[in-house]
Image (cartoon, rainbow, N blue to C red):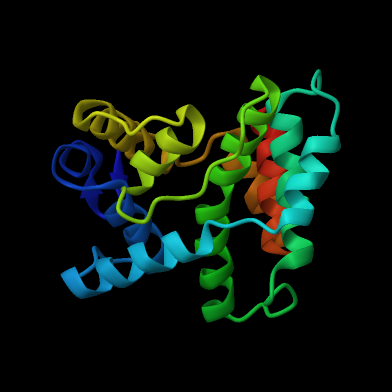
Length: 189
């Protein structure tokens, strides 16, 4: 398996999830400066409007996580400042914001089901570290953070499975990015 020409084994051994996400979005591995900018954008984009969090809290607790995620992604679309801009630059920016916000949705719903308070993103942590922090409320150990990082790298691209196929079909109809991702989540479920 290769991501944009790079062997996934090499990426998993030597890269971070942020580097791999950048690679998939931009076509090349980032420079140090581009990676720092990308990490900053991810951190700044992770916050989810309080109205969406309130909406998630109103969904009955018995509703499955994938159903809630699909609904949360739909809600995010209504708050995206570039929703109707389909240019390549705007599409990449929307994908980056969505990448940053999905962990917030996942963690928020998990903590709501557990009756725990929601947490804010910690910019000093990596993407994987923040996901673990937002879910557990504990700063992850280096080994847990790296395990999550590698897991995210390995799940980042699946070539042509059902969810990828579904997203491509929806995209081919010239629908929006959020609809394609919601459909992919529905297929993955």
